[in-house]
Structures are given as C-alpha cells and as structure tokens.
Image (cartoon, rainbow over all chains, first blue to last red; front, top):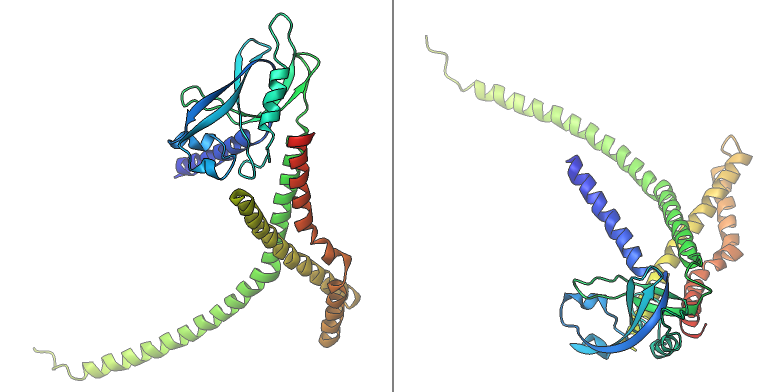
Length: 224
Length: 92
C-alpha cells in the first residue's frame, strides 16, 4: 500500500513538473543557420504538440509550419517550430510568427562568423515522435557564454506560491468559521441521537425481553 | 475568434470564482476581527445584543470600505497581465 501511495505521489509530481517544464519559457543561446517551411501531417495523437494558430487549424489534417534551424555553442543542433499560439494554450499570445521568421532570417550566421542570439521557447524536442519547441522570440546577445536570468519564471513561481498560500489560508478560514461549527453542532446532535438510540435500545430490549418471556409461557413443560 | 471567446468566457468564470471566494474570505476575516475586538474589550462577554450590534455596525462599515473594493482587482490584474504578455510577445 505504501508503494502504491508513493508511486501515485511520484506520478503526480512528475506530471506537474513536466507540465511546467513544457509550458514555461526557456532560453537557448544559439546561432541561427537556416529557416524552412514544411507540410506537417497533424492527424494523430502528437497533434497536442502543435499549435492551433486560428480556428480553422483545429480541423485541418495538415498544414505548413515554419521552422528555425539553429546550432548551440556546443555544436548540437536545435530546431524550433515557429507557430502562432493565438488565444489558445499555452498563453503566450503569440501572433507575430511572420515577424519572428524575418528576424531569424536576419540573424543567420556561419560557424566562421557567428552571430549569437537568445531564443526564448517553450516545448520539447523529441526526435522519435517529431515534436519541436515553439520559438517565442529572438534577441541578439554578446556571445555564447552570456547568463540569462529567467525573470519571468522566478516571478511566476513566486506568484504561484503566494496564490497557493492564499488558497490555503482561505480554506483554513472557511473551515474554522463555517465547517467546524457545523461539525460541532452535528457532533452535539449525534450525541443526542446516540442517547435517544440508547434509550430506544433499552426499550426494545425491554419489549423483546417481555415478548420472549411471553413466548416462553407457551412452551410446553420440559419432558422428563 | 472562437479561441478568443473561449479565453474570455473561461477567464471570466475563473475570475468570478476567485472574486466570490475572496469576498467570502475577506468578509469572514473582518467579522472574526470584530468579534475578537469585542471580546478583548469585554472579557466577561458583555451584552450579547450589544455584541451583535457592534459586529453588524462593523460589517456595515466594511461594505463601503476600500478593502472590499480592492477585491475587484481580481478582474483587473489578470486582464492587464494578458495585455502585457500580448505586448511583450509581439511588439517588444
């Protein structure tokens, strides 16, 4: 039972962490090398890893998606999709896909003469199921070693903690003022019920007792 | 457009739930403060009717207080946050 509990808790924790890791913005220092556009088939479960830029796109089984190809300082490739999130989830309210693609084009560079940029993105890259993080913005930076402080995430988690603490306080207040008094009343009422039940039980015992005694009077005399 | 309406409707519902919950909480805290205030002034308990009157007067004052009006920020702040995010993502 303890293993079941811990497995469940671990699964919940993993889902929560995964959710935030997927949804919150992250920064990569990269060098943009190319951009391209490719038709994507969207009619399987990996659809959830692609955006719905507008209302029609939810019904489409395939459409063109723009991509930004980049290389990290360690030489590893990083490929981003560039899609509007529009008004839907996650709430980045990104509508400037075409502008971002232009900026990416403008910042293309070669290994010999690199131009480093910080790409803000959310999402995961997975080669097996062909999913890509979605680029949100591109900013030129001084070099491959600049430190970027994730201010947005810091503020986000502080506010989230405050909201959770507030909800806890609200719940405690509600319990203290609204539930506990009712429970006390119910406890008193229950005591009353128990008392009455006790009396009734005595009465019943009395009644059955009397009945049994009365029935006993019909029994024949024990044979000898 | 449907996505925008969905955001607006569900956002409004979420903010309204938060507004009602915060209103109840704030009112409850205020009432508790008033009760404790009275009990501190009257260690013997005082007159029950006067105690009720004191609390009712305090709650009347709360109706017009700034604190109660500040709960409307539950609607204002998320809307501003959305507008700021919209600006930062697309125009900054």
